[in-house]
Length: 516
Image (tube, rainbow, N blue to C red):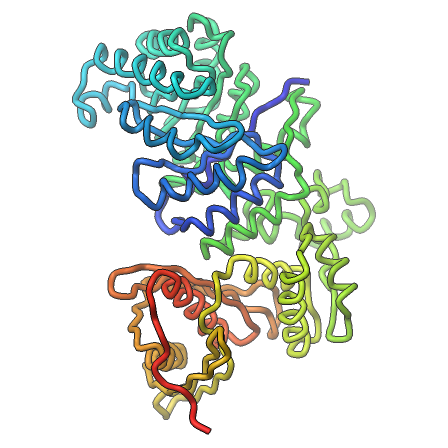
């Protein structure tokens, strides 16, 4: 069988879409999970776009790209030589660094965006690839908006950059314009017309503006593409990119049709999807293929009857194949550390002693408040703990008064990392606003909510609520997450998570200590 290279651009194309930005710590956490997932290439960022993106890409190269069996670590650059220099400075620490350089080739982009001639773009493309090859052998070239580019000119550019040393040729459907049949024909013609194409890996990068990204990617594989660029949960510009989990499971489930395989460890898919949702605070729709909450759910009586008799009647994949828990009820308040460790291992989490201690404490606290603890609760606990920054302030006590005929008020007590207690009160338009006002009073900082999202991790009245916030402190925007069966408490924890990130950057001290 042919081997398909899985190029993950969650941390670059996915992260640059509205609402999905990640800081360096979050990118590192996600990159480590992508490495466990077994992707072949991680596109870690666009280094010249900002100092933060440069540093995040550099740290992914240093900390993830140097591990045994690590994927290639890739950075994106335009064809400007300064872009390429900056990209190399970020990715050079990886065992397998890659420079991915891109320039538009469609006439509409040349005329209105670049204001360059075809000849100028061809020359710049060749110079860029040659310059990148001076740094490393693994150079990828993308002609942006290839689906709307003049075909003859596109082939001329691709032939020239292959001769200059490009070893991966990526064909982007940048605006999601292509339809599977015509896209397949274009990929087939590229293989026929481009000189030296046998020297390079042919890749595709499809967007989902018309809902065709996965279909176009699979059509390209049928025509000889051997790398697919995709993202977890299909995130990305506008309507998103081709979804990694859908492509991988289509190739696995229909191996008889595609006669191709991937190196992805599919049992890590569900965990990876949930981690991304937790980091960004944006969750997939319930009917999302593979990883949506309803992907393996059956409500219709006829379907339930069939599945109870034989799962194959309505399930073409097993939930276990993607690492999805099939047994909802997991643990309770009488469960011990060994049981928790074993169940977390079944879910794909191998925690070190310190992390396990924190997870066990959080689990016991949750189990005291819930009759049933589900696998989704455990995933929420572990990912919440994993993505927390150094704790400068922890929630020690919370009391809220709210109702239809009273002014919402809250009393909050925080514990600093050195054990000191600080307490104050606040009022607000609602209970959450009052809690945040009390926290602001303690720290002397005034935060403004830019975004607030809440969801239930499980079903039922005692479901764990997951809250994700983005908070502006004097123009510095930081994100935070928190979870609890009490949504007010979850909101407080999410706000404190954001505050703790800010404290890492500024010398902030509590103002009020609790008296005797």
